[in-house]
Image 1 (spheres, rainbow, N blue to C red):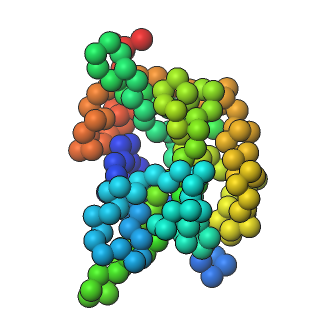
Image 2: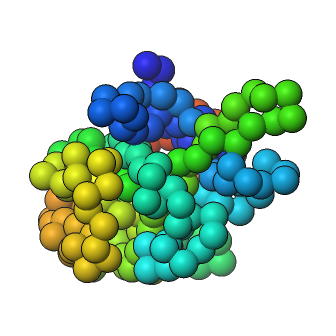
Length: 198
């Protein structure tokens, strides 16, 4: 597996999913394209799914029931206004690796070629993340990983509790280079602290 330091929508990322009772790891495109879509470009607008309404949206309610996945990450970027510009911050986890809750689907071309894609679930940010954005990815705790994948974790209140129980003191953030604004910039330098920003 080749590490990526700056994954952008429409690019591929590693996801873990369950099929026929077995767990699989595979690279899917970020930006969910529903199986019934006429144009795969719809995926550009489907990079996130709000947990609060996921069972109501036609694009997400099917995958929520049948096609769940986990997206392993060590952190993510958010932008915070500093004066007249927005500066990127790398939000990371003290456990180094966590899993975002995701949904996936498979779209087929007229020739039968398959496109596997995914979206990341979001909800209201916890106390730490609110300093950077009012939303954040849903983080699935270790004890809930299997029940998320197999679909047994379905009650919204139980899922919402996943974020509520994630410790704020297990998260950190620091400013990074504005070069992360470009998807072409993908190196360990992406996650290095920018010494010129407090």
